[in-house]
Length: 313
Image (cartoon, rainbow, N blue to C red; front, side, top):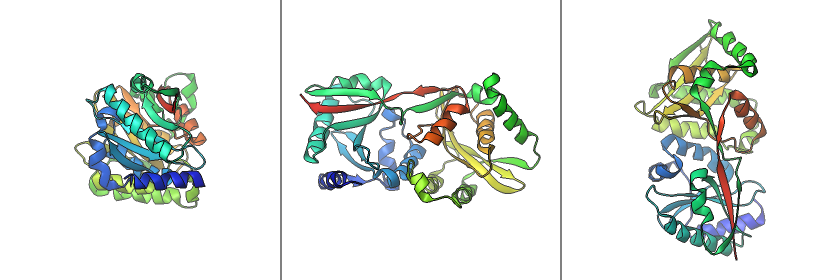
């Protein structure tokens, strides 16, 4: 964190911004009508909070969070309640701009704006507004049928990798239960072994800590997932949720063997999520390796998000 960002955070804290912790899960749940936040989505913020220094405050009824990451500009996110009018959003942006000005930031940057809400953010009065596509926070959405069938010549090698595990009798699966969630932490620990923590901190933060938080609130009536064993030993997992007939979510996943995670995703889509139209695999946070993996997994749509920068006219 550079000197300007450190100064900005001191100002934000004096204005009542608080660090994000797992205790805020119920608070974030109240705003899911805007950004599809729910309990397990909020646990992802547990990982990000270590890398992005997330702080939050309720401003005019909106959940406003501030992020900083490396040398990147400080940015805010705004989670609106479902029934909020655009005229109300004007007051929120005005308040955030005053905070940014007090913190001596060159502009107010509001990120991760869903495409369907962009018109509200660009209609704010009294500012020069520059909006641009925020590819780091856009979400990867796959048709579940495409993940299961892996059609076409471009998926030939993925079909071969999936078949390799299908034919391997040493590979077995079990449906995720709360009493077995400790296996996720074991797999995370195996994955982390020999890796420098600075790698994860460079884009996602500590996913193991987020997974531990998810295990604590895992509800078998809402959430689901798969454990994969290889030769009787834990080898991978995926945590999922079917939110509606339209959308399912893949939240966390890890595998300790090359190519195994593609197979786990295939099995999760086929056995747990096949009734949903889409599987949402969240954003890539701008990490090149994660972007390549998600882009190559299957044909996909990007559910676009945007960033708006506000300066006074």
